[in-house]
Length: 251
Image (cartoon, rainbow, N blue to C red; front, side, top):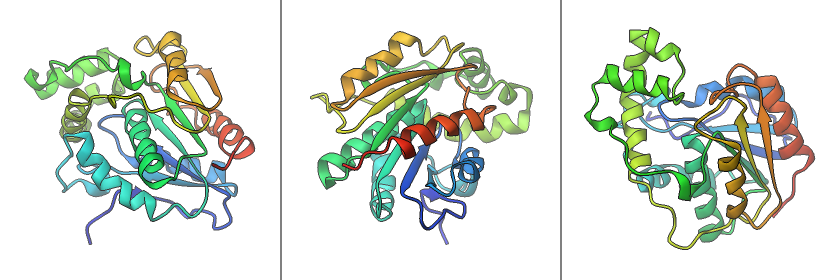
């Protein structure tokens, strides 16, 4: 059986909210596995797994946002039996915004909340990168230097080889991405989160997400760098519980 785009780990049946999680470029859904135990029983964690990684390793990575959304939107729609909140980290925030936009505009299913983590807003993504011209080693080294992938990827040849294939696809998705011609504001509360030491996503970048919602807006800063969420799952899930569970609004 071909693995699909959603992964979950014994979600509590009585959970009042779905937490839809999207990971950074080159990575997979399993980083969110510990979050389910930390957020139970109020929230059910539903992680997006793009092709070309982890349990979808044999599938060809997507190279355009349209292909990503064609893969993910129907699967998510089939699971929306309760309010949902989107958490997207880095590239995952960009995909999460587009996913929420389509679910809201085309299907009337706006999220109850959206967290843009370690990401610039859709209109501040920048131009195409020069990464297609780099060797695998050069690519990993550059992204580690820029704080876009964890340093461990540069010190482990096996890990680097696992990361590069989906990473090149994800970079192509980001390089070819164009924000919607008419800025679509999400019809829900939005928060922009970042690590204090993340030089690629500044406080100013985080605050710019305010322009992408008609709901309430706030920013949060955590200890750490671009990947602040990985070593501190309890701090991040505590903030998610406050935002997604205690402050949940149905739309």
